[in-house]
Amino acid sequence: MAIDKEKIKEHIRGIIEALGDDPNREGLIDTPKRVAEMYAEVFEGMNYTNAEIAQMFDKTFEDDLTFSQESSDMVIVRDIDIFSYCEHHLALMYDMKVTVAYMPRGKVIGLSKIARIADMVSKRLQLQERIGTDIAEIIEMVTGSQDVAVLIEGCHSCMTARGIKKTSAKTYTSALRGRFADDIALQMRLRK
Image (tube, rainbow, N blue to C red):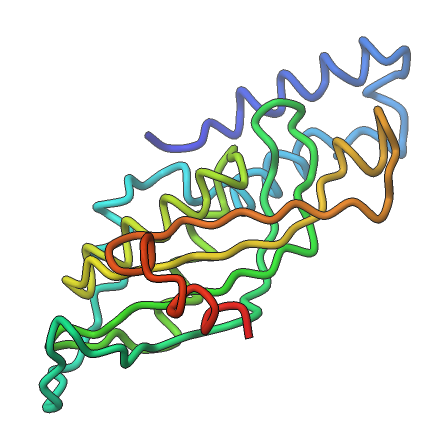
């Protein structure tokens, strides 16, 4: 489903009017168009399912090392910066840092693809919890490994800029799959 920029422009004009301003005044006349362009960019991920994102970034390399099911060798990429928009308030979820880990099972994914997957998943109306689950699902699809973990730390403007206004509050979520779900030692390695 493609993003409908014309409908966005129409509704942004209506919001400007509902706020009591004139959408035809000089400073606002191009605002609906600018917002529609911004939304097309920041919500690009809404155009794709998780399976389509997995296909888009399915660039793996055969791994000549043989990892057994008992092996605890893992790939960890930390501090992937993303932002998203809360589906409850359309408020910005910002300063989000994502850590993705997986245990290779015969193939490894290009490291930049992990960051690209996190970025594309964040470009949806989201919940922080779902971002982690979606990233984990896509990494599992691409790598074939069931041992995947995604940790996210983020700030939410629906808590910092409005409502309770707690500017230092951070939200931590984790999506732990396979051995990461039960192995405390592996979980500890993630948090170092």
